[in-house]
Each structure stands twice: as C-alpha cells, then as structure tokens.
Image (cartoon, rainbow, N blue to C red; front, side):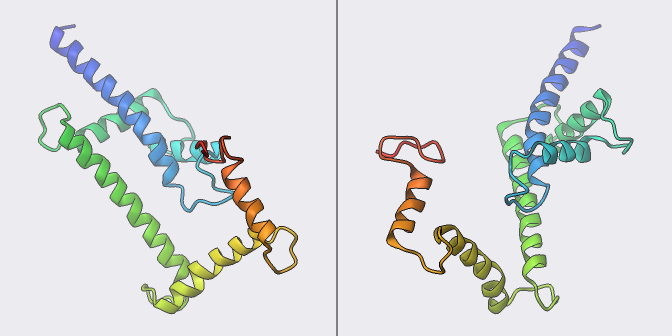
Length: 178
C-alpha cells in the first residue's frame, strides 16, 4: 500500500468516525417530536434512527460497508470545494445545513399538528388553541399537586424546589443553586 493510499484511508476512516459520531445524535433528533415517550435519550428510538440512517438496503442489518458509505457520503457532501479535506468553514456550513433541516422538520410538524382547518398555514387562533392551551394545561396539572383545581403558594414553592433543588445542591439540570 502506498503512503498516499494509507493517508487517504486514514483520513476517510477518521472522517467516517467523526461523521458517524455526529450522525447518531442527528438521527435521534430526526425521530420527531419530543415528549415523555420520545425522550432524547430513549435507546429504542436511537436504535430505530440508527437503522433508518445507515441500513441503506433495508435488510434489517447494518454492515460496516453501509456505515463507511454513509460516512463517506456525508464527507463528500460537506467537502463543497472537492479538495478531499474539510475546512472549518465547510464543517460549520454542513452543521448549519443539518440544523436548518432539523428546524424545518420541526416547524413543518408544528404546522401539521396545529393546522386545525388543514389550509397549510397557522392563524393566530390556531396557534393559541393548539400550542399555548395544551402547554398551559400541562403546566397547570404539574403545579396543581393535589389536583384540586387551584395552585397554592406551597405547590408553587414545591415545584420550584423540585426543579432547582435546595440552595447549594445540584438541581434537576445539574446546575449549582447558590
């Protein structure tokens, strides 16, 4: 094997690993809306998205060749000037393109969920009825710990405590609360 061939294989292998590492979280994000049953860390969902991304022949298995082909395709797609290497600008552009595509899918899903009359656009009424009403109802249900239809100061304080923890302790999101 020539030195150039070895270098090319090494570069493509490294790029493949990097792209695969980047592809798995992206694949998990593409699964659709998040919620209690669709958690970001849901192992089953990640497995499904992995297969949806890499099982190109849809035979229920992912081969090393399919992973390498997927990684190479992403590399080639990101290498916009075709020089065989990825610059910072090309990597940023590729990440931004993936982010924009994900944002587009989320917005399209939101329109689909909230578009009560099916016209493909959202009115202020549809926005208010769909998104805000359900969010407010969920928030109210979480805060109304005893289910009596009213939120007390104690329930509000308990909800804040559950989210942030006691002063000096780590809260739900791992942040110090000093």
